[in-house]
Length: 117
Image 1 (spheres, one colour):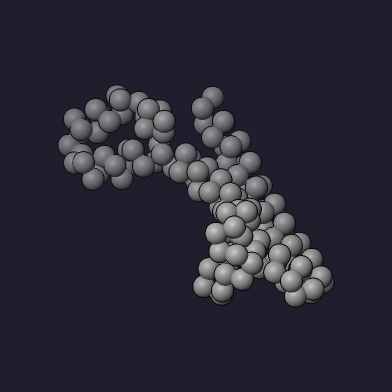
Image 2: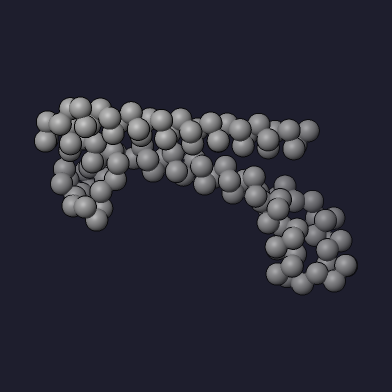
């Protein structure tokens, strides 16, 4: 969908000006795809930080340190090790991080919307 937003005239103009395939990608196509890529990256970060069910079901309650994700670690510390204070602090830090990522995402959406107008 992002490639369809690139005006064909711009790509043709770059070709006429002598830009090779790599130069067309680097200087023409990639700048047009930057907002879409940034939005998808931020959504992916939010999705993966909040993915608890998938990891908990596939890996169990003790996946080991190599495959630990924040949500499973918080669950284990809070409900299995009964460190409620530590689990609460970890949850609060995760919420703050997600709020920062969400704010960046919303700002990106506003910038993208203003670029379209």
